Image 1 (cartoon, one colour):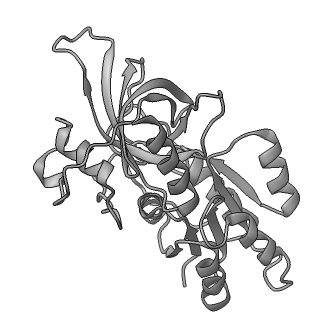
Image 2 (spheres, helix red, strand yellow):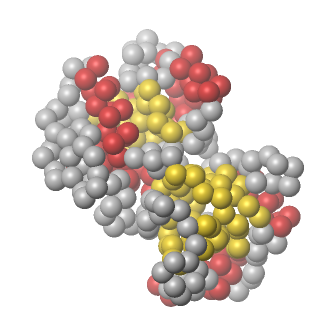
Image 3 (cartoon, one colour):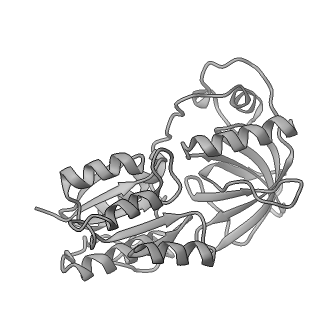
Length: 294
């Protein structure tokens, strides 16, 4: 029997990325997944995983509540628990450590970080397996053996459970999206003007101007940076409000990116971010923001 790892996140895209990297690099790995803490808790009791990788901000039961339940049960008190979070502030991390988290990863993370954190816990429980001999991608370092970029291959686009009227306008009016991306929707236009910070792996942060926005995705303009993000790269979006406060952070990935001008030296870029969170609280916050700014 291989090592059992449970991946917990309300975003299917994040779960799929994490599972792919672990499966490709750790031979004999057994993986299971849950969309929230309540389902994860049931799987922990039934399936007995040896490591839990869990998001912190989820609906129904959060990662914090899940960890409290685990640490409060003598049978699972020492189960390795790696927190995955969009919040890297010191107070947040300290609180997680006090609750008994084994380690943490801040979104967006690189494949090197993911494999290093998991490897550390596998070593701690004495179950470090042989690593699959995979050739490193050009320009990438080696961690846990040779690994590719987390989003180097094609990933399935996760269809949203419900599509808002704002999405209709963005899909119909944005030239970066093709017909195959466009479901049958009512042509109702919603625009949200504003600013945001985009955080990509390897500590790349970009300011952007929001052009259009819905509950599913955001179209914005940004200045060209030395290390440009690529399609399917993870991103954490911090949207600025008028009172200089940040909305709840939203997790997503790069759906499309292109130059804003027809010349190779342009400094302007167009980028579309598709959100992956399924948290009702974040949907409510985004809905209020869109309603106030279109």
